[in-house]
Image 1 (spheres, rainbow, N blue to C red):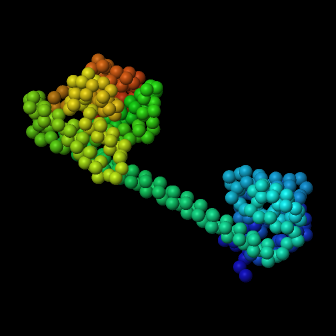
Image 2: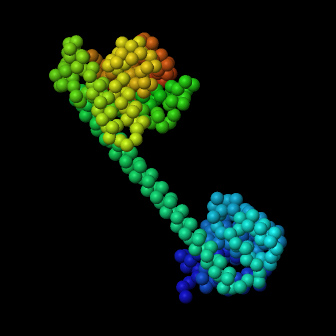
Image 3: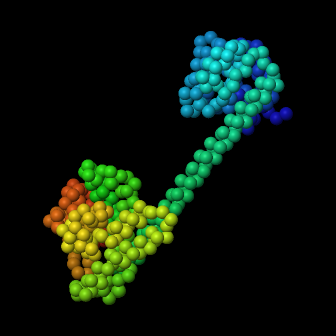
Length: 377
């Protein structure tokens, strides 16, 4: 017969104040199971606090000090031991005694004197059930971990794909991936500040803020459809050329909308990306494009993006202008409150202008970084 103390054997804890009972039960169980012994309720609780948890407890009811019912209740009250089946082994044979045992959390109740074959059968049944439950719990934990791992993997792939698509549009416009990083971080910082306002607290929960952060890089995805002679023109655009340039908002919306139609269910991420791409050039006073929306008719996501995008455009070098200072950019956005920008967005922005500067430095372009660092220092 195999060693009863081998690590793959299930473990039974015997708890009884009677040496004769312990000797009898130990001899019966040792050939099949790893067997631990406790001659009191207190000792039993000490054992289960150790590194080796029993798979089953055979527990006497009547013991000096801490009785079996209380030991059982304590085992069932602790998350670490609540799943261990407890079988009461006792001479107390009244129905009320048996009911008290089950009320305390016992899995079974065996009355002394015991029949060895019956007792071994009951112990075996409960240990098999425990093994199945442990297997299912381990499998569920493994599957949960695997789902989380694959979700993280898909998320990384999604993030990289978003940045690759967005960078394609930015590259055509002689901008850099750092512009995407800066604007998405501006949007997140602004949204986190804005949710201190009671009106926006529920709209800007953690999930929505994260979706805004991820969707912001797609704000100019529609530029992939603008002809090079207009998109890359170094001088001022003619009125006709500007009308073509303005269509990048519609092209962006249509591109994202076509992706939405491929899905079986609505996507909050794509909805926000579509709002931002289509409406980030709208202005609070209705003078923007493509629809001329005004006030709160402009989606909140696009109002956030407008501040982030304009700030970054102001502090960045463009073919038609040098980079403005951080202070000048802040002044322009402050002056645009109620005209270009939602006043609440501007109030939130003015509370965290240092954060915008830090983001710009963290994801800097070379000439921008030199200028901002000099301003700060």
